[in-house]
Image 1 (cartoon, rainbow, N blue to C red):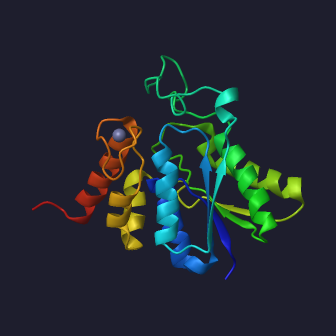
Image 2: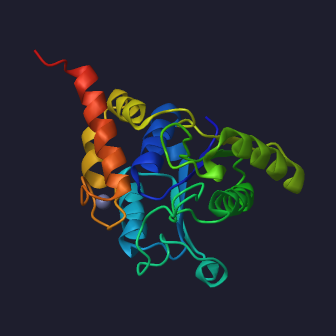
Length: 221
Ligand code: ZN
């Protein structure tokens, strides 16, 4: 079985990816890479390390990008900026410029050094915030760029690409890890694991998706 490197934040999306990769390839073939890039909550990095350990992945690495905050500004990396969307802005102020390009390039460099050519990232363009680096066109283009940059054949897997949150919960359920993902992962902008604060946009999206999935699974009498 070919090894794969999962870009892993410890959130719902990347944990669902991780569980899918483990189900398909076995934990012994799955590696995880986490970025400490100045995101609001250091707990995110710690949780990612814990989940990777609990799931018995072949290796886990955390890379610190301590200069990111020096060159860009957004609400995700500055807890003094309220999260929201400015009038007319194409996406919310939690968008981190270039993040998935930076993550995938770094992941590919690291993966190649370990003899790994398969990468996985938990982006979705279905019912999210419209971040440009979550779109399929970007992922395809980045895959091609990585191949050209390092003269090899990477495959970037984005299994959640066209999934809504409800479909993502359905996948987690099929993988037998719905409760694990619900209670163990951190998606909340306020840094509260599991069901989170329930009020931030991320919690609302997550809860609405779960409610939608559960309503289809257990039709009310
Ligand atoms: Zn929240």
